[in-house]
Image (cartoon, rainbow, N blue to C red; front, side):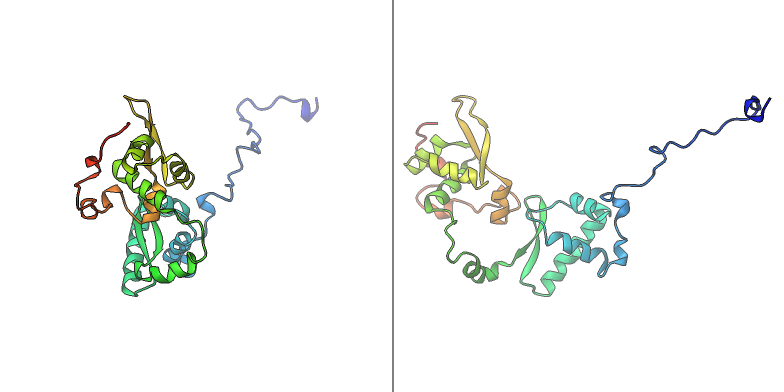
Length: 223
Protein backbone atom coordinates (compact mmCIF):
# COMPACT_ATOMS: atom_id res chain seq x y z
CA UNK A 1 0.00 0.00 0.00
CA UNK A 2 1.43 3.34 -0.95
CA UNK A 3 1.87 6.14 1.51
CA UNK A 4 -0.99 8.00 -0.21
CA UNK A 5 -3.36 5.05 0.39
CA UNK A 6 -2.60 4.61 4.09
CA UNK A 7 -5.25 5.98 6.51
CA UNK A 8 -4.14 8.82 8.68
CA UNK A 9 -3.35 8.46 12.33
CA UNK A 10 -6.67 8.57 14.21
CA UNK A 11 -5.02 10.70 16.85
CA UNK A 12 -4.11 13.41 14.41
CA UNK A 13 -6.44 16.28 13.57
CA UNK A 14 -6.25 17.72 10.14
CA UNK A 15 -5.96 21.47 9.79
CA UNK A 16 -8.47 22.85 7.31
CA UNK A 17 -7.13 25.06 4.56
CA UNK A 18 -7.69 28.74 5.24
CA UNK A 19 -10.73 30.26 3.61
CA UNK A 20 -9.45 32.93 1.22
CA UNK A 21 -12.51 35.06 1.94
CA UNK A 22 -12.85 34.85 5.72
CA UNK A 23 -9.10 34.92 6.37
CA UNK A 24 -8.66 38.26 4.61
CA UNK A 25 -8.45 40.75 7.46
CA UNK A 26 -7.82 43.74 5.24
CA UNK A 27 -10.21 46.67 5.55
CA UNK A 28 -11.67 48.88 2.91
CA UNK A 29 -9.88 52.17 2.24
CA UNK A 30 -12.76 54.14 3.78
CA UNK A 31 -12.53 52.54 7.22
CA UNK A 32 -11.15 54.46 10.20
CA UNK A 33 -8.22 52.02 10.58
CA UNK A 34 -6.79 53.32 7.30
CA UNK A 35 -6.76 56.92 8.50
CA UNK A 36 -3.31 58.38 9.10
CA UNK A 37 -2.29 59.12 12.66
CA UNK A 38 -3.54 62.67 13.13
CA UNK A 39 -0.56 63.44 15.37
CA UNK A 40 1.72 62.78 12.40
CA UNK A 41 -0.02 65.39 10.24
CA UNK A 42 1.07 69.06 10.21
CA UNK A 43 -0.96 70.78 12.93
CA UNK A 44 -2.30 67.48 14.26
CA UNK A 45 -5.95 66.85 15.11
CA UNK A 46 -6.70 70.56 15.41
CA UNK A 47 -5.65 71.22 11.82
CA UNK A 48 -7.54 68.14 10.62
CA UNK A 49 -10.70 69.46 12.24
CA UNK A 50 -10.22 72.84 10.56
CA UNK A 51 -9.79 71.10 7.20
CA UNK A 52 -13.14 69.33 7.62
CA UNK A 53 -14.92 72.49 8.74
CA UNK A 54 -13.65 74.38 5.71
CA UNK A 55 -15.41 72.07 3.26
CA UNK A 56 -18.79 71.51 4.96
CA UNK A 57 -21.79 73.19 3.36
CA UNK A 58 -24.09 72.79 6.35
CA UNK A 59 -23.56 72.74 10.11
CA UNK A 60 -22.03 69.42 11.20
CA UNK A 61 -22.63 67.69 14.53
CA UNK A 62 -19.81 66.62 16.85
CA UNK A 63 -20.50 62.92 16.26
CA UNK A 64 -20.07 63.35 12.49
CA UNK A 65 -16.80 65.21 12.96
CA UNK A 66 -15.56 62.53 15.34
CA UNK A 67 -16.40 59.77 12.85
CA UNK A 68 -14.61 61.58 10.02
CA UNK A 69 -11.48 62.11 12.10
CA UNK A 70 -11.47 58.77 13.88
CA UNK A 71 -11.41 60.32 17.35
CA UNK A 72 -13.84 60.51 20.27
CA UNK A 73 -16.68 63.02 20.51
CA UNK A 74 -15.09 64.34 23.70
CA UNK A 75 -11.89 65.08 21.79
CA UNK A 76 -13.80 66.90 19.06
CA UNK A 77 -15.69 68.97 21.65
CA UNK A 78 -12.39 69.98 23.22
CA UNK A 79 -10.89 70.94 19.85
CA UNK A 80 -13.98 72.95 18.87
CA UNK A 81 -13.82 74.97 22.08
CA UNK A 82 -10.16 75.69 21.42
CA UNK A 83 -10.83 76.89 17.88
CA UNK A 84 -13.69 79.14 19.01
CA UNK A 85 -11.43 80.79 21.60
CA UNK A 86 -8.52 81.12 19.18
CA UNK A 87 -10.59 82.74 16.43
CA UNK A 88 -12.11 85.18 18.91
CA UNK A 89 -8.80 86.08 20.55
CA UNK A 90 -7.06 86.60 17.20
CA UNK A 91 -9.90 88.79 15.88
CA UNK A 92 -10.19 86.71 12.72
CA UNK A 93 -12.57 87.73 9.95
CA UNK A 94 -14.42 84.49 10.56
CA UNK A 95 -15.77 82.65 13.58
CA UNK A 96 -16.79 79.12 14.49
CA UNK A 97 -20.39 78.92 15.61
CA UNK A 98 -22.87 76.24 16.66
CA UNK A 99 -25.93 76.72 14.48
CA UNK A 100 -28.95 74.50 13.77
CA UNK A 101 -27.53 71.69 15.88
CA UNK A 102 -24.09 71.64 14.29
CA UNK A 103 -20.83 73.54 13.76
CA UNK A 104 -19.73 75.66 10.83
CA UNK A 105 -17.33 78.48 10.05
CA UNK A 106 -19.01 81.84 9.34
CA UNK A 107 -17.76 85.27 8.41
CA UNK A 108 -18.15 87.80 11.21
CA UNK A 109 -21.17 90.09 11.14
CA UNK A 110 -18.96 93.19 11.27
CA UNK A 111 -17.79 92.49 7.73
CA UNK A 112 -21.25 92.00 6.23
CA UNK A 113 -21.12 95.26 4.17
CA UNK A 114 -17.95 94.07 2.47
CA UNK A 115 -19.39 90.62 1.84
CA UNK A 116 -22.64 92.02 0.49
CA UNK A 117 -20.72 94.10 -2.01
CA UNK A 118 -18.64 91.10 -3.06
CA UNK A 119 -21.36 88.43 -3.13
CA UNK A 120 -24.64 90.21 -3.83
CA UNK A 121 -23.82 92.98 -6.30
CA UNK A 122 -25.32 92.11 -9.62
CA UNK A 123 -27.09 89.03 -8.27
CA UNK A 124 -30.74 88.46 -9.09
CA UNK A 125 -31.34 85.51 -6.79
CA UNK A 126 -32.25 87.51 -3.69
CA UNK A 127 -35.69 86.96 -2.20
CA UNK A 128 -38.33 89.51 -3.13
CA UNK A 129 -40.05 91.65 -0.53
CA UNK A 130 -43.16 89.49 -0.89
CA UNK A 131 -41.13 86.34 -0.27
CA UNK A 132 -39.47 87.84 2.79
CA UNK A 133 -42.82 88.89 4.25
CA UNK A 134 -44.29 85.45 3.62
CA UNK A 135 -41.26 83.73 5.12
CA UNK A 136 -41.52 85.89 8.23
CA UNK A 137 -45.16 84.92 8.71
CA UNK A 138 -44.35 81.22 8.36
CA UNK A 139 -41.46 81.57 10.80
CA UNK A 140 -43.61 83.15 13.53
CA UNK A 141 -46.86 81.25 12.95
CA UNK A 142 -45.64 77.78 11.98
CA UNK A 143 -47.09 75.38 11.28
CA UNK A 144 -49.39 77.47 9.11
CA UNK A 145 -51.42 76.96 5.93
CA UNK A 146 -51.07 78.98 2.74
CA UNK A 147 -54.62 80.25 3.17
CA UNK A 148 -53.76 81.59 6.63
CA UNK A 149 -50.66 83.33 5.29
CA UNK A 150 -52.74 84.80 2.45
CA UNK A 151 -55.27 86.11 4.97
CA UNK A 152 -52.53 87.85 6.95
CA UNK A 153 -50.84 89.36 3.87
CA UNK A 154 -54.09 90.14 2.07
CA UNK A 155 -52.87 88.60 -1.21
CA UNK A 156 -52.54 85.15 -2.75
CA UNK A 157 -49.23 83.58 -1.72
CA UNK A 158 -49.29 80.32 -3.70
CA UNK A 159 -46.47 81.32 -6.06
CA UNK A 160 -44.38 82.80 -3.25
CA UNK A 161 -44.76 79.66 -1.13
CA UNK A 162 -43.60 77.53 -4.05
CA UNK A 163 -40.51 79.73 -4.32
CA UNK A 164 -39.74 79.33 -0.62
CA UNK A 165 -40.17 75.55 -0.85
CA UNK A 166 -37.90 75.43 -3.90
CA UNK A 167 -35.25 77.43 -2.04
CA UNK A 168 -35.41 74.92 0.81
CA UNK A 169 -36.51 77.55 3.34
CA UNK A 170 -40.00 76.17 3.91
CA UNK A 171 -41.30 72.61 3.92
CA UNK A 172 -44.52 70.61 4.27
CA UNK A 173 -45.23 69.72 7.90
CA UNK A 174 -48.41 67.67 7.51
CA UNK A 175 -52.06 68.59 7.35
CA UNK A 176 -54.44 70.54 9.54
CA UNK A 177 -56.54 67.93 11.41
CA UNK A 178 -59.71 70.03 11.05
CA UNK A 179 -59.51 71.38 7.48
CA UNK A 180 -57.03 69.01 5.85
CA UNK A 181 -55.06 71.99 4.54
CA UNK A 182 -51.32 71.52 4.04
CA UNK A 183 -49.29 73.13 6.80
CA UNK A 184 -45.84 74.64 6.32
CA UNK A 185 -42.87 75.22 8.59
CA UNK A 186 -39.35 76.58 8.22
CA UNK A 187 -36.42 74.22 7.63
CA UNK A 188 -32.95 73.66 9.04
CA UNK A 189 -31.69 75.56 6.00
CA UNK A 190 -33.70 78.58 7.21
CA UNK A 191 -31.89 78.44 10.56
CA UNK A 192 -28.59 77.96 8.77
CA UNK A 193 -29.08 80.96 6.48
CA UNK A 194 -30.09 83.23 9.35
CA UNK A 195 -27.38 81.92 11.67
CA UNK A 196 -29.86 80.81 14.33
CA UNK A 197 -29.44 77.94 16.75
CA UNK A 198 -33.19 77.38 17.00
CA UNK A 199 -36.49 79.17 16.41
CA UNK A 200 -36.32 80.39 20.00
CA UNK A 201 -33.56 82.73 18.81
CA UNK A 202 -35.94 84.64 16.53
CA UNK A 203 -36.29 88.26 17.66
CA UNK A 204 -39.45 89.28 19.48
CA UNK A 205 -42.12 90.38 17.02
CA UNK A 206 -43.93 93.05 19.04
CA UNK A 207 -41.23 95.78 18.76
CA UNK A 208 -41.60 95.68 14.97
CA UNK A 209 -45.40 95.88 15.06
CA UNK A 210 -46.20 98.76 17.43
CA UNK A 211 -49.95 98.63 16.82
CA UNK A 212 -50.39 94.90 17.52
CA UNK A 213 -48.92 92.46 20.00
CA UNK A 214 -48.60 89.46 17.73
CA UNK A 215 -49.68 87.96 14.43
CA UNK A 216 -52.63 86.43 16.26
CA UNK A 217 -54.18 89.91 16.24
CA UNK A 218 -54.72 89.63 12.49
CA UNK A 219 -58.12 88.33 11.35
CA UNK A 220 -58.12 84.57 10.99
CA UNK A 221 -59.63 84.50 7.51
CA UNK A 222 -59.79 81.09 5.89
CA UNK A 223 -57.75 78.41 7.64
